[in-house]
Image: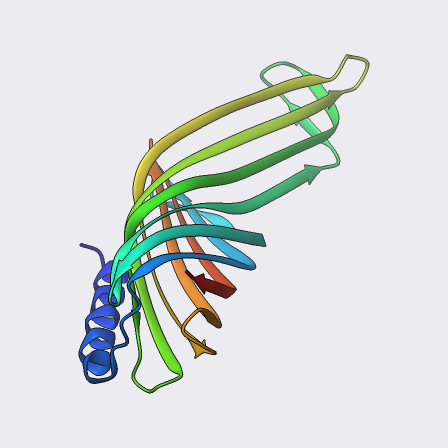
Length: 205
């Protein structure tokens, strides 16, 4: 288990201990959604490939027994785009007036979800599980004196996600708070860590 996962696990354990005396019975179905920003950092074969950020949103639904339950959801991690105004490829003896590319990612989640109350209105949440992700890459190369060339590929796999949050329970049915979630993407030498900060609203039936 890497350092990030260990730290999140310790936070979750601390939340459970702190909140045990004030736990509410939240048995039932719930839905929640959040919107905010995703911040990426990527490495390729161990070398730094840079960082970027973009708008992100997530939707979840699940069922809790008292304050622990299961959840399934979807997260859109947004996209990052690049543009080069001039490039010369010596292997093909071609000059390009522009190169545009775009990388986007999203995925489905399945895991555990906890909602704990240190006080009557203040809550701490914790979540984690499987992240079934998909990446999409598109590139358009505009060569001088030639037609545009288009490239693209998709790749997918399963990794993990984990997160913590805090906020206010306005009633037995509604909550508003902030979340930090980490989504892991790793395949074929590409390693992308996605830190997502969102404002979240939850409704409990």
